[in-house]
Length: 110
Image 1 (cartoon, rainbow, N blue to C red):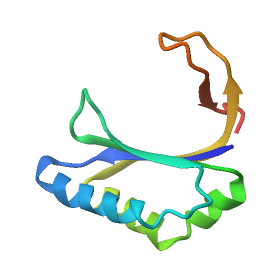
Image 2: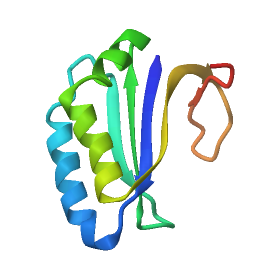
Image 3: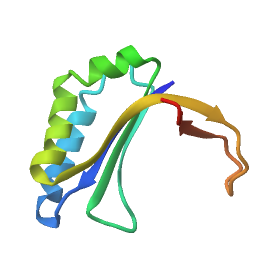
Image 4: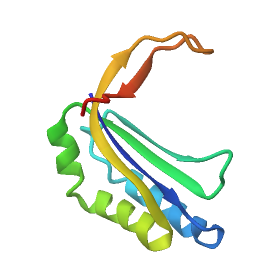
């Protein structure tokens, strides 16, 4: 399993436009994507994060060349500030957390 992550700051007066772009992008995510989510940080209402999961690295690379990805990364950069862009292989780790769920973590070696 592989991941793709984008995060950044969007000023309040641009958040509506950014959120509309996220809705449009979500309609263009290919079916090869295993799952994705858009989040607005609870502690910092100006910080947004997009994370998606893919079956292999080739699918990540293909998506990063797609109009939807270009639109999303462009929205972060144009409407605010793109502060993090990462992708790589996930490792499966079992941990005891408060919800007693298994956790996926990015592979620190990649």
